[in-house]
Image 1 (spheres, rainbow, N blue to C red):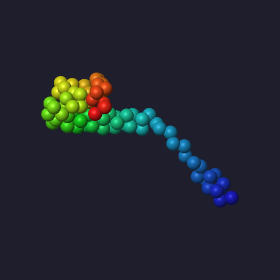
Image 2: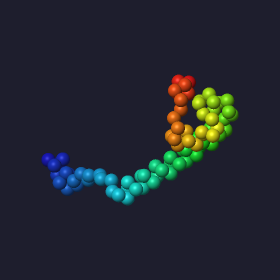
Image 3: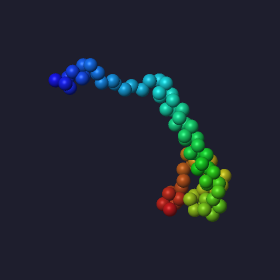
Image 4: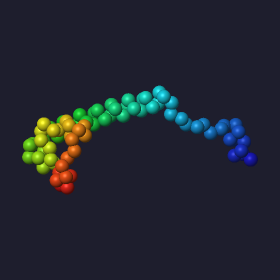
Length: 79
């Protein structure tokens, strides 16, 4: 009886994402992605040319690789 009474008095609130929540989440996700990419680029730029070659990258390809504009070769994926 008490379970039924509490449901009548305080019905369960359905949680729907509003437009503002979706916009806020998308914006926050883009901001986080931006800083993660910047950190990855900075880390890769610190590597010497031999280390970059070992992972299948040339120095000129760093930004494109971080932003998924190029795919690593199959040889680099196997390492």
